[in-house]
Amino acid sequence: MLYSNLLTALGRFDEALAEVARARERDPVSILANLSVGWTLMMARRYDAALVEHRRTLELDPQYPLTHAEIAWCYAHQGRFAESFAELDRTGRDPQDPFLGFLYGVSGQRDKALDVARALVRQSRKGYVSPYEIASPCAGAGEREEALRWLGLALEERSSALFLLKVDQGWDNLRGDPRFQAYLRRMGLEP
Image 1 (tube, rainbow, N blue to C red):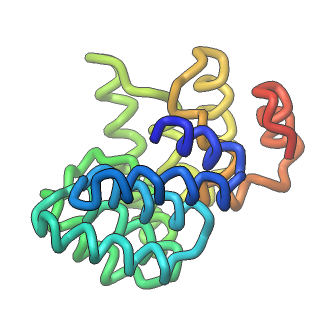
Image 2: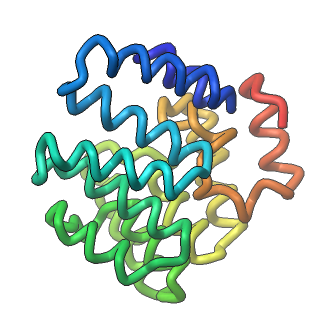
């Protein structure tokens, strides 16, 4: 399934889906294989299909927090913010979760989004926090300069989270910026 993750990161979604489908055929009750099908569809922006797959995964384990987090992600990108927050509640909503900060921002709660970003910065003084994670609530809040600055720092430190930069919907409001385009080129992920 790691190969399917690479294909997804490169935007080769049909090939990635074929890979994860094979993994699920080999082990139809694998939570990871089922979750991967939904995740790949989600990254391909096929949210309704992803939700179907995530609900199938919930049949295997209704409490699996990552499935609820991915459902929340789908809902957020469909503009279904109340449902997204409700799904995050099922994960035990961490107040310093970068996605929560992003969700606050895109749902119009800019101050709360920036509170999460500030909390992550404070946390980074005590232990490691990827600049990529700090950039997420900034992007959600529409703080383009701050988001790009933190992404630049993530690139400098070669953060492993950057592997999805080309396809992650959380960066859509930055894609047209020449600096973002330069980050993609620097990573060999031509826009």
